[in-house]
Image 1 (cartoon, helix red, strand yellow):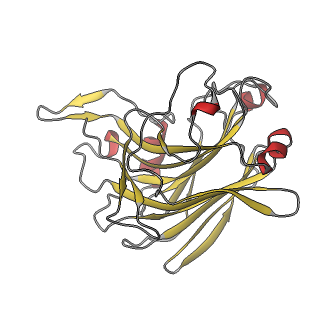
Image 2 (cartoon, helix red, strand yellow):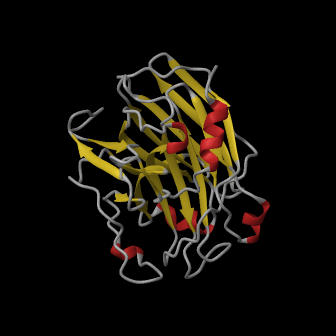
Amino acid sequence: MRIARNIFLLLLLWACETDTSTLDTGEISLLETITSASVIFTHSNPSLDTFFQTPSLAYISGYFYFEDTLAEDVIFGLDIEHFEGVDNPLRFEGADWMALAGFTRTGILWFPIGSPENLEGIPTPTDRWEIRDFEVDLQPFTWYKMTITCDFDSLQFVSVSLQGGDVDKTLSLSGFPLEYPNYAAFDKPTLTGYTFALRGLEFSPENTPGFDVYFDDIEMGIYTGTEFVRIKEDGFENQQTVGDIPINAVPIPLADIDENLWYLENEAAKLEITNTVQRSGTASLKCSADLEQ
């Protein structure tokens, strides 16, 4: 039997930010949950000028890889979000529209959906989840390409696709609303892309080893009315470490953020640029779901 029910309960513990409360086992201190997530910003591509005024379809794709020791309770995936900014928002000041989805190695897909309050400009906790069984067992030592497509006009998911090994499958998510989970105090609109690995102490009380998922060749794009246009691609070759988002003022000036760099999405994230495993180029990003404080 697959572990979808347990995963659903685990997800209820996570509100898109790492819970930094800890459990003292007597020997080590463990986090209640960890979301090791990276984030990259993109806003200066000329194609985005029109998109930010009249949003459309968008996607994020990327490759993930894990070893045979990865624990079955670790959840990993991608996310693309549209921040409206605070200076001249399209709908609501600081709105953050999120299209996030992730897998376990047993092929369980999960994704959070929005609430009616979001369409009134009210952010809500990430506590409404949909879970689907992709009916595949993902294999270790294999690069899989994951693609999330969403519609930032209708504020709905479109689909999630997975290719790699003997898997080539797309699941329609049409009609599921995007969530507005956070007030994002950036001055201008931007698209953001994310990789993540997630774990909760509830289902790994001993923090069983098998923490790491590798990501490479991330791509983001938008629909221009006639075709999809790639607006960002990155293989983690532009940096050696992942640091904090530079926040020098509020609203946060996007001009202070380097669009060619990945940043820590939260302070507890455990990220490493590594040349041990890579799909292309010389590097990949390791996201570790290790709960140890």
